[in-house]
Image 1 (cartoon, rainbow, N blue to C red):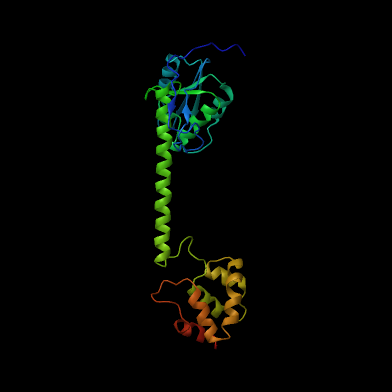
Image 2 (image 1 turned 180 degrees about the horizontal axis):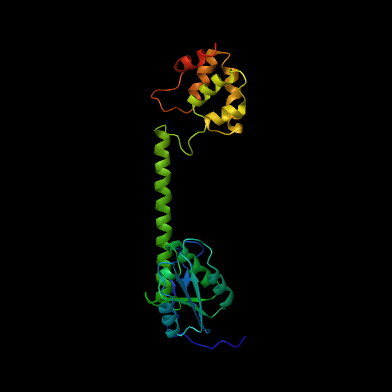
Length: 266
């Protein structure tokens, strides 16, 4: 490969204090005494762009990146909703410490604020700068590095709020007695019906499972305890009371299923 052309970035190297020196993930916890210096560069500009199937503006991005001085450009043709961006992977394989990754706008690189912060953090650890032409952001300058640490702190704050709200909602649902997670495959109504079917001649577990719309393993898991309990009407009531309620109002009880259970002569 031919030697890369050299370019230099001017500007002050004055330290910015009060922010973490890492951008791992989206964490940017302020810490007293931390020092931030812009990335020191003496390499080339490497361009990256992305287009979706609905927005074929590759030529515009390529023109803008070339005009900005990019000696090499990579482009992904995808929606950006999936993590598989092969050209971005090639970009990271190509860039070297001292280079700067350049994009036309921030939304061409990151699918979300968290994704953007993660990528820029990775660039910083590699000693690579980052520039966005539209937003006029440049991490090779103190001001540009400061902006991205603010972004990182904001992303962490948003994530913390979402987690807190989710936990509060789950706690409130549990306090109200609501069942969380996937609905049970075997409701009390299905269990009672399965017990009835088991007493019918020539009934198999496979046919019962098919009628109930559940797997055989689900049926085998649910029935043994109830088969033992049905020999004791009080025991059956206790077991039914522990099952998820069916669609009818009121808690499940043994009396509620007398009509079903009585048909089989129990």
